[in-house]
Figure 1 (cartoon, rainbow, N blue to C red):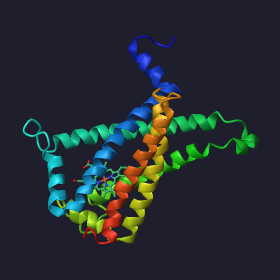
Figure 2 (figure 1 turned 180 degrees about the vertical axis):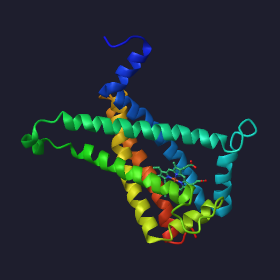
Figure 3 (figure 1 turned 120 degrees about the vertical axis):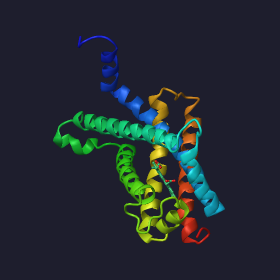
Figure 4 (figure 1 turned 135 degrees about the vertical axis):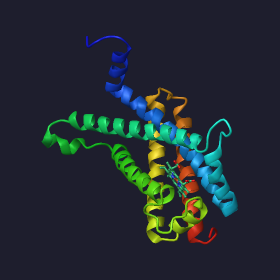
Amino acid sequence: MRGGGRATGGRTLWDSSVGKKTVMAVSGLVMLLYLVVHMIGNLKIFFGPGEFDHYAHWLRVVGEPFMHYEWTLWLVRVVLLVAVVAHATSAYQLSRRDIKARPTKYVHKKRRASYATRTMRWGGIILGLFLVWHLLDLTTGTVHPGFRPGHPYRNVVDTFSTWYGNVLYIVAMLALGLHVRHGFWSAAQSLGVGSRTRDRFLKTTANVLALVLTVGFVSVPVAVMTQVVS
Ligand code: HEM
């Protein structure tokens, strides 16, 4: 037996595939919750710059006077960062294990990862890259010419006034839909929620969530392109 006490128990759980899948499921659900809230918040763009910018300001003062300016926002950011790192690390480690466990080279071709697994891996990579670009675009403004801090409405309209902004976001949102669709279902199985009676409901929920998120997010660039929002 290696060592003793609680730390070993935690270590063994993390080392096991079941432990890593549980970490993936929980961190995925945390991010999913954030995405639903973020998507609903983004729809405020349809009510004009006043309401959208006011909402962005509220994100910074929420919890006051108990919380200081931006404390709640930073708390959310830390939780999200932990979720992203945990999700990506366990995904990477699980796929390394999966590749190592495959039989020798010449049988290799027949035993490729399934379509769903490959879609999840590539989707995850696309979403990770998108997230970095998105933060540099609309949070820090590093890759956003003429970025105006405190004016997210203008910044969003600017982003979707470029062809590459639209392409990047729409491709990422489609990847997000596919990722959520399969990810939600997988998370339910990893957490042991699935059963013969519940599977139908879980699949429908996964499809509805994926569709609502994709349509909700994509509606913003489409609205700017069609000048419904300008
Ligand atoms: C059309 C789609 C989207 C639009 C228009 C949009 C818009 C925005 C805007 C305006 C901000 C800056 C908010 C502020 O500083 O007040 C922001 C931040 C952020 N967005 Fe999005 N977003 C979209 C999709 C996504 C997606 C798909 C993800 C995740 C995969 C995401 C994750 C984030 C994160 C993590 C932040 C940083 C929040 C913070 O810490 O301040 N967004 N988004």
